[in-house]
Image (cartoon, one colour):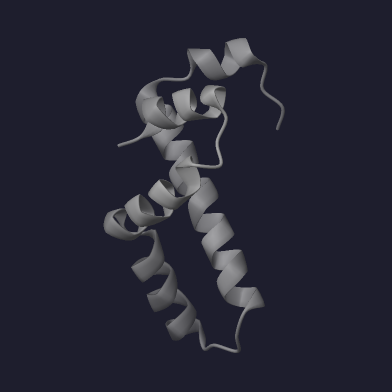
Length: 80
C-alpha cells in the first residue's frame, strides 16, 4: 500500500501502533520460517515470545538508531 504523508498523518496513534504490530509480526513470522525447520507449535511459540511487548521494546530500541527524524516521529506516535 502507498500512503501519502497526509494519509499517514491522519492515522491515529492507536492506528499506527496497530499497523506496526502487524508489520512486526509478519516480519517475525517470515524470519522464523526462513531460519529453521520448526513444527507449527514451535513456530507459534517462538512468534509469541518475540512479538510480546517486552521483546518488541528491545527490538525497537535497537532499531531507533537507524531511523530518520521523520521515521522517529512516526515511531513515537505509534508507540503503545
